[in-house]
Amino acid sequence: MNSAKAAIDRDIYLESLVWRQTEIRARLETLRSQIQVFQKEEADLMQEVRAIDLLLGASNGRSTSSQSKPGSRADARDPDGHTLPDFSAWGPTAREIYQCTYKVILDAGVPLHYRVLAEHVRERVPLSGADPGATLIAHLHRAQEIFPRVGRGIYGVAEMVPKPSTGAVDEDQRPSARKRRPRIRRRRIR
Image 1 (tube, rainbow, N blue to C red):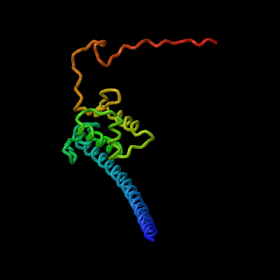
Image 2: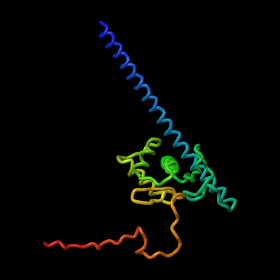
Image 3: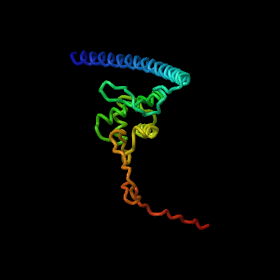
Image 4: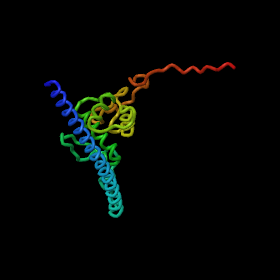
């Protein structure tokens, strides 16, 4: 008798958990749709602000701060105290990915492999596509001045990466310049 009552109690408990899970997923879906609406509204307002800035800059004969090129420094700071570059030239999704990637690299203190970056970025921002790592590489490639590639699959932040020396270096002395064998073209015999 006790085992039958325990089984019924367990079934009731499991049903309540399933019901709660369904309720939470429905609420998440509602929130996601609201977020998309807000992101679209934000993008529209940012476009309007840029247009007004352009008009103000043209009427005053001077450029405004929002006309700066992507990746220029701004006084924006995140809650962790990092000074973030101005990502306003990109869309809302790319802006989120860039801000998150920037924070992850700064928190690590060293350039990171794109797979590691993708894992950390995915925790905060959804990366679309079948391969999130490839999606992140595509985004980083568009912002090479902010996220330079420092090695094979390894990306850093411009402030971390040492600038190349201005002295002339012989092509053979550069570490990145590898001598490759010439490609041999074979003719097909018919």
